[in-house]
Length: 424
Image 1 (cartoon, rainbow, N blue to C red):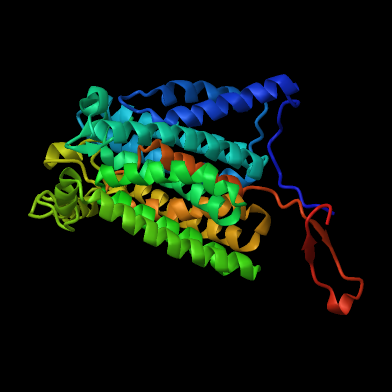
Image 2 (cartoon, rainbow, N blue to C red; image 1 turned 180 degrees about the vertical axis):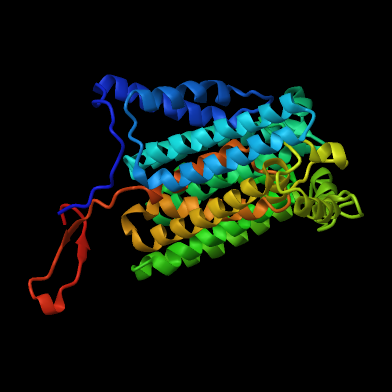
């Protein structure tokens, strides 16, 4: 008998026309997540209506996402307590409100994806890829100041595309890069012609962002994606294909990088950005110095100091999402946030290992989300829209009910649960 995950009561199913319209709205909302010149961005304005109307019109709330809901509620509660520790109550309350809104988008994507993870995951990543193509193209033409777009699409001589900062553009591009890599590794030859050009475009934009974190995030994510498929592959031909494409990819990237470095503008900035220690990283009040001072302050302030208060005490923001959790959300927010990250990674990894039927969507999510959590140790990611998107997608596959048919052996002495796909 098939196992069904429990859900809270839902409204009757929508008519086909309304259902397709709803899917189109979700697609477009993911797509416009690539355009964040200022805040609030179009994504926020549209997502409020999408999230609210989806639950009102019958999107089931699966019991599998309750841990996500519980930990996010603790996190936001910590922020609400901490905001009373500052004199700037309005600024702090707005900051926490944005966190609450983004947490709501995670719940939405988790519930939405869990209803049909493969097809809806394909839809979401396709929308994400289309938006990323626009953002990458804008970054490239801006970097070379084509048609006078340099001032609009660059910052500090680095490509920022349709975002406010180059350090946001680069990690935003990583999930669609992974999607293209997976399509090329596992798909037919024509996928190279379909996904190869956008992959090259995004990788070039990543290079021109000159984001050290973005470079490392991309390399580690591709390594994780390829390694997981190589480890889990049961087909020798697929294993050889992954190894072959991996070698060819390294060669092509090396050749492309060498060609890019022949441009003095790129070479000079690359040499500067390749340094592991920038001026703003070192010193007592540098990035890492602030981490130490902030950690010491956090041990003394269990309720936190309030959102945005850190930058008033020190020259800049924490640039560490975990330190920011302690400062802006107190100990309650810090421990709930760390717990959320660890539980998400563990349950997502278990899902990848145990649910072969979900690997097409779960592997790129894990490969992109794990390095993103590491990136949070040196940059504030707590208000990145695509972080909450990936968090929601992770819980979407975690909460997906197991609909494989289960049966028992007739001999009680050798009774063992087995599972086969429906229709096998």
